[in-house]
Length: 168
Ligand SMILES: Nc1nc2[nH]cnc2c(=O)[nH]1
Image 1 (cartoon, rainbow, N blue to C red):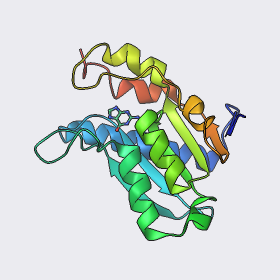
Image 2 (cartoon, rainbow, N blue to C red):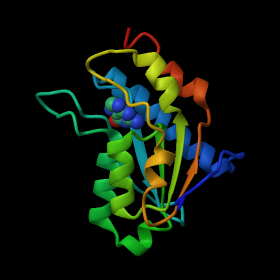
Image 3 (cartoon, rainbow, N blue to C red):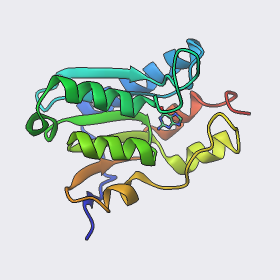
C-alpha cells in the first residue's frame, strides 16, 4: 500500500511564493545562529497559520526542534484535523523521518519542499550537529494509512545556497 501521492510537477505561483518565504526564513535562521531550516503551514484559503525556524541548538532549543515539527505542532494546536487536511506545509528542506511522522500525525494533507534530503546529506556530510538521514519523506508517508500529497524538490539551488559554508 502506497499512501504518499507522488508529485514533482510544476508548482502554482502561490506555491512558489510560499516556498520562497520558507527559504528566506531559513536564511534568517542562519543569521540568527540557528541551523538554516524553516517551515510554514498555510490553510487552503491561503492563510498562513504557523511559521517556524529550526531551534535544535541548546540551550534555547533541543535536537527535536526541527522547523517542520514545530510548525506542524503549532498548527495542530490552532485548527482541527479536518482543516489541516486541506493545509500545506512548505519547508526549505525535505522533512526528515521525525518531521514526516509529525506531519502525518497532525493530519496535514500536503507538503511542498525545496532542498531534497539527498542533497542536504551531501551538504552536511557527517557533521555531528546534523547527521542527516538517507530516507526520503515519501518512503515514510508510504507506510501510513492516509495519503499525503508531496511536491519536491523545487527551487533546490536557492535552498542549497542557504547551507553552503555552514556545515563544512
Ligand atoms: N528538514 C530539516 N532537516 C533538519 N535537519 C536538522 N534540522 C532540520 C530541520 O529543521 N529541517
